[in-house]
Length: 383
Image 1 (cartoon, rainbow, N blue to C red):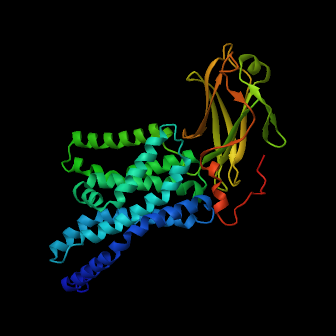
Image 2: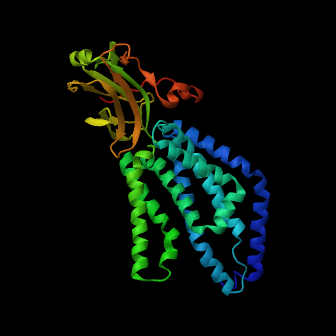
Image 3: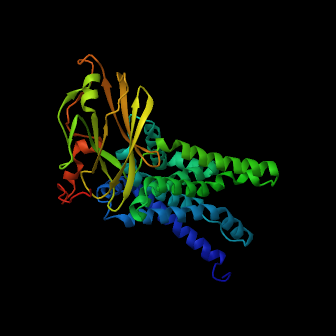
């Protein structure tokens, strides 16, 4: 092996790798838009492009191994009197993988984010990371001077791609995917805290374990801010009646206390999920900020217009006036959407439940019309 990896041969390979990177760099600007287009296409053709998510996950694991072994290999080569690994080449490879990952997962995040909630902060974080990955001075400064932050940056990329591919490839629920992604992310982030245990004392080990536990706890507690990257609410409606045979809301009613007492209220939602995925969602009813009811509903994926689910509330408080909100949540605590309405004695101040099914999110744009062969689905939904 020593005879094969001679200094002169290593120098030639290093020179070749650097020349390849120099030739590719002027064209690197094409990579992010291609990755974004692939992510957007995969969101709407998700059952046909599972291999791309798997390839990304494998690429991230290889990049992680490369970053971990870079310092060790450089020291070994230096001791043998051979040229070290070119930092420019390894960083360029990692940058390409990070750009592909961030721009591939960005459509999933942007489409499934509930923008009038805390998920806005998570989406802005992903956008900021995507921008950082294409600004070479900032990215190379992060890679060269802040290795701990660099590993955390990489760990967040791993978290994103796992959120996207686990429900699609393994048919895990969003809660299971979130938990597994969080555990693997904490593992990937371990190198960020290794410097704390270079001096092996009990205090430093406790600090090391405490930081890891804190990172996992913050991730789990903040899951409501993480959009469910493969689930989104496509439509919603409020109505006084419901046609169970056709699964459609009926009627119109001004939401006064007397009307609610007489008819109750239906909340209708359509949730889009990947084919083969079974999920439990919740309609959580709130009155003036206080949670009153939690209705559990089971949905199945595969229907383009979304799986239709509804809840019917009849037991309203004696004084139902005020602001109402229905949170649509996953079983793992991630928000899919919310519906607000006002109950008031004054019919001019009260909301109207008109039974109209209104598109939510990007469904308003009817994006499927731009995808060849994707019209209205005749596929029946499970009952």
